[in-house]
Length: 337
Image (cartoon, rainbow, N blue to C red; front, side, top):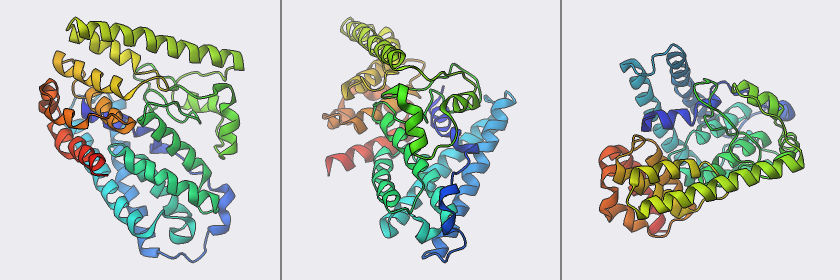
């Protein structure tokens, strides 16, 4: 899977997402504070959804390796980048786009665009706090907070809370799909209901083309233990392989280990990227991007090393666009805080 495929795959879930505004109808038809900004935000959704639909159509038609498909993916990356930049400007100027400022529809679209800002998890985290404040005032949708909360948690390698994120986040059924680790899993449906997520978690899984059964408390503990054991076993194998300089073997074990969100460490992500770089692993354009950004977001301390250590040179060459436009600016921003 290429870097481009990873970025698109991570955001495709929300193509057909239906906003839950049933509890907020009092804001419909009311005069809003920022009508021009409202129209602009709604317009930004047009291309966001248009090209995601094209992506799904091409994928389902078996055209994922075609030039047309690659052009659509390129366009999606450009759109997400542009939308993220504009949303930063809007939020820095006006704060979170609440119901009273932009209306229900635009407020929900603002969340959608931030949800797709995966190349800047720090921005998503900032928006999460603003969204929570808006919800506490009754000026935003509770379900939006749940989805963005899970997105931010997984970007940091932590467990999700509301079971909104799966291993593929798509309904294309092109590979094994499962919910990524969930905290206190037996009570996840209660938390979904508390956040006004109307679809039952088991039905939500079916909409993503996999089966899921809400576990009992005992079963949930067993699942959590399995994730933890998988992490411990595979991370130890990865570290041993690194010491032997068996970099390709190490990369494979790291990739398996790092599926266990909630147990990983910032250093794990960086070491996984190092192994992928040194071995020129087949996932050098996808997993390495993912791991480096997660490592930085999770709080990796030796950030200057990422820019200077020759072990990462293959990643720089493979992901030059990401390296120059995403990783280095992110590192510099963190260092200059």
